[in-house]
Length: 159
Image (cartoon, rainbow, N blue to C red):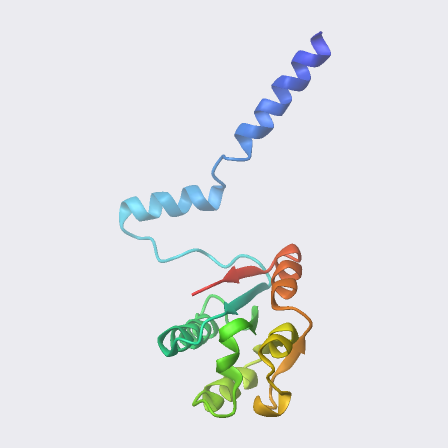
């Protein structure tokens, strides 16, 4: 009985501690209250983010490209971030040769952004690789890429 109670008490303690604020979060909250908060501190050696694009809405496409550029320009992340942009579904529009995004994508690729396209989408929509820009890579499944990257600890950004 004592073992059961001790186990329950430890489990309860772990449950409570998993919701406790970290020292950094407590410091950030204090700084915010004082009016000195300037954003989270990038304490890790490296960060990984995968951006999801599944829309052909030009405003959303531009927002996604702008978000990636902003992340690359963030001084806290300079030299410490790897970014992948995965397009699938209607997001494939981004990589089409007949669209106006090639210059922006080339600039992002030159900054190390991985530009990936879902092969399932190409099959489903009967799109040839010849219709797409040559600067992209292909993955078997956009959703699979998201699942794998998240399991690897990558942050998912879906503007």
